[in-house]
Length: 95
Image 1: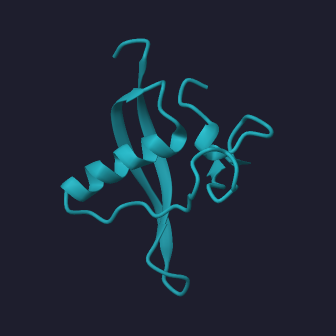
Image 2: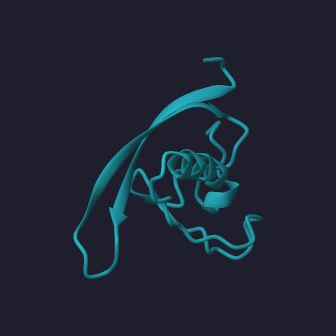
């Protein structure tokens, strides 16, 4: 792993629908570029899941430019992650 990449363990809440039981699933990603946004990292995870025949992780987004606010996620228990006033799509993995 170079200083420009990260190995990550993601813990994602998965639930098939509002009336279905849910639970956390852990996913491993290796070689994630520190230059990716958080949403780009989720795209990489989804590509991996789809290639394995698994359901992708669902998340809302629209502009990916930090304007609309659709990409709100809880990251480590914080809305939009650790940077106040930064939308999830503008949060980069180097943080």
